[in-house]
Image (cartoon, rainbow, N blue to C red):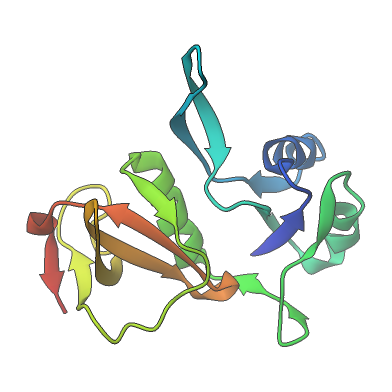
Length: 164
């Protein structure tokens, strides 16, 4: 059994994951908690980290069971084949979400002409590698999920990073 990414309908990530789990299919929709502000109040809400994506761990012979689930659009493909997600990428993604550092997704990965490749030296994210970027809010490390061509940015103190 391997991990695969599926595209789902807009704002259906959580519901699709729950439906797949009820069908005894291991599913993971990375959700982050964030504060939403309306004109009259603030509220903590869970939002998908990767809009439109849910991950499933299946044997490919069960792909029709996944594809026929309400809200599922299709499997993510790479070079015409269903894209397999490496176990290490899923482990890193789960670590990032579980640790609840400040996260943001920057869409497709960028060229890394600037910045150093780094490794996190301690804490729950120890040994995760990425690239240092800067923005107006401070220093981030970009963790690249090559299998689905996505980048997740994590705000970390520079003391936790070493150049590799």
